[in-house]
Amino acid sequence: MTEYNATEEEQLLTNEELAALPIEELIARNACVVCLRVLDAGAIGNFIGSGLAWTDTHGIARHRCGATYIILHYENDDENKSRAFNVPPEFTGIPELLLLMRRFWQETHSIVSPGAYCFPGSSYSNDTDENVETWNSWMTAHNTEYEAAIRAFEARRDAVLS
Ligand SMILES: [Zn+2]
Image (cartoon, rainbow, N blue to C red; front, side, top):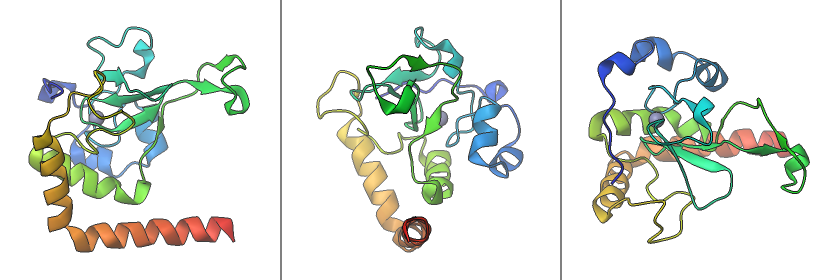
């Protein structure tokens, strides 16, 4: 299981202050959108100690809380084209689920979306069965809110597509 050793001093603003900010602003302030701690994506190429680790999926890393971000961006999404540097990390999760993910993290300090972007048994992900069980049982216990968040996401997606 990924170690979590962050201290309170690492927190940039109070949870209330941070939680009021939009995703882009949090990332601009170098804060993880889920655990609200330092994201430190500037340490690309030296992830040890940065709180970010690569996944099995090219260019995607996850924070110690489990939140996943696209770190490497490519021109026109073509990996054969040169990397576009100075592009901020891009949160890969569903924005409508963010508040639930934050509450899950605050209540359990267990990894959010365990195994995301990793193959089962991957050395990149040493999440445990306990991580998966904690995630699944918490989301089941909050199913009404989860379903509402998914419906909100689908409504936004459908509005964009129509
Ligand atoms: Zn985090």
